[in-house]
Image (tube, rainbow, N blue to C red):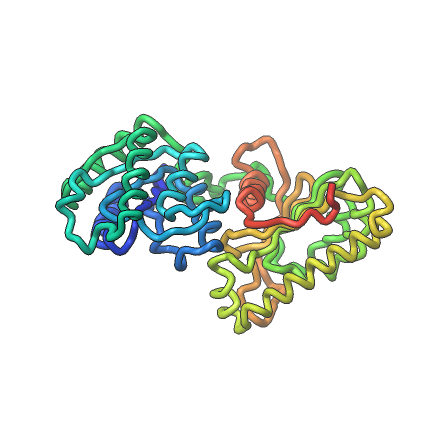
Length: 366
């Protein structure tokens, strides 16, 4: 298997633009995937949530410190802190393998690339001291030395601290014409989503329903009555996962389908109201016990809709055009003993979206 490792590159930006380009090229040459601030909008509270999710997904965290401390934000406790230091603190908090590279001679850095104020210099000095105490630190004085040290240090870190890495989906397992699809839990393949009997699937649930949508207005309304019946059952847990408006794909997706962002916002708000109304009807406004219902807002790529009904999952492509069509290849899979079964692949994806969600609403308030 051709495994790649995602490396989060953390540093100030304007003073290290050229170094970051060289680092990205070096990482690509080392069969790694660079990730960092170039991928995100301007630093603010919303982008900070996205950055944390990218650090979560990264295998390793790479820190470069030179003559700048960088712009200030507010950490999760509401305290003023530089964004680079916030990234470092978060990576350390969640236990990411860290390698840090600190410039060995700040006095020789050109003036426009160093902190101009005493306060900034003091913050940088304090941050550097913290990193030296906490992390695996190397020192550099020029870009050539930095790149060489990064390559050798990262190679050693991968050997001594292996992580999951990233593998192409078709390399995890392959179904050849000789294989029995049942081994991978493929129960049925649909070409028309209107052929799927969601009422029957929902009605048969005893414990768990998971629903992943962009907003899911049509599906939710179409299955409203049977969903309301399941909301009466206190033995059932329902997790609804919707695309968050702070997702970096939110506006591009709205543009792609020819709508403004507020269109998707309004659809999402309507779906939330539908779930609230269904829950209130099912439980007589909370007077009776009902299912545990939580709505999550995810930051993943909106490529597919997923529906889990206990040990079965339906997967179909998200509708990527303004004019909907029922003609979509859709998989119906069932959990089996094969660890590579399709159910496990999709179930892991659902859990990832939930674990990395930006926000949630527990409608049942349990």
